[in-house]
Length: 222
Length: 222
DNA sequence: ATCTGTGAATTGATTCACAGCC
DNA sequence: GGCTGTGAATCAATTCACAGAT
Image (cartoon, rainbow over all chains, first blue to last red; front, side):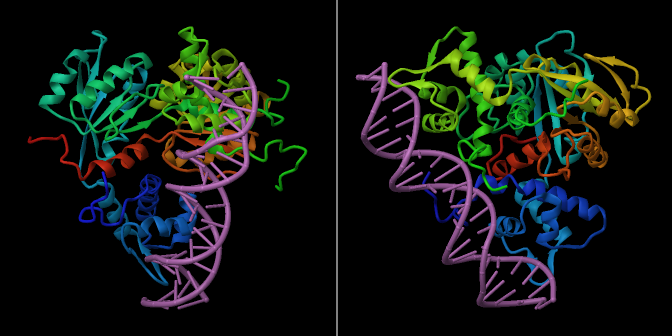
């Protein structure tokens, strides 16, 4: 747990920095698709809504990618970020829960196109088991553990009701999954070496109403 | 912009504090449904995965809700949080984009049950316009502005492709919408008084692969 | 004995500001 | 003249630690 100087090259990169890199990568991809070759931190700041100084400092954790007086080469920086984030390879995922959300995920092309491949899908509902959706055949949830041990994945997607989510997370963890994307409206227990990201639109809405509630709301008389 | 002592009762509550309140509320609701009457910051901490000191400090921005030596009355604190967050009333929302994600949102009961009512839904695709889904009839996107001016909403949900999202946000802003939940994978420009929350699973995944990439991944041979 | 509420201390993140390079 | 990379300075968030209440 103590930082090993042999391994820890740059002391330890704050999570909040890592979490901004994908955003930069997305902005760079946009610029790249437009054929732009060079970008300054100021310009990237306008696109990403992060300050120029923040961008430069974030990048400086990983190396020196820019040219003074000029800026960053778009293609080069994009590739570096992909390398840093581990986006050059494909990642295998298992989806658990094929209800409304799970189905939207399976049919959504946006994961696969970014290198996130859904390798398995599971549900408890026998009426959907056997169906082929997106790239996979839905299997019964009872096969989850066995199947993942034989054909492991890197990432688990949890899209089951809140009450079942903890059970699912426990199984995923037992199968060696180290990253979980959770759509269930609850915060599951897990070992500290397991990454977890929450997709929780209701919490997001509830955070916004606080700011809304004292305004002379747009809800005029109808 | 300078804090007006008449208005600003407590100087200004950090966003990061406000954003934790919904989580506390959810945990309290769970305890309440189990019939628990009193909870300590330590116990709430275990449920919410926030430290006890943090919880106490967060709550102290808004008042003194606990009893020393005893803890917090679950029902009372829950009600206070609802009041603070503005969750005692219903909120009206408009959904723009009824593709895969939009459809999942419309059919999802989780918004309505928390007081977030979808009052309108819009899409450009004539083949879905006129369909009745969830609680509403889908209308053509060209009617968006006119309709929102007549029957305003508090919150806009953007579930259109990235390229159209900015246009939609601009319209919503013109119609007086002050809070936007954005599912499009891009960060739209908007005035600073407009709240925006991003639902972006791909960014979440990309943030996790950074931590994954150096592990001897669970993806064993073949 | 237990647990809140809160200033003070600490830790962490962001911004500043400028030397150095193109 | 313009822009990066970065230590130093500032600002913000979290944790500590304890007085005071039950």
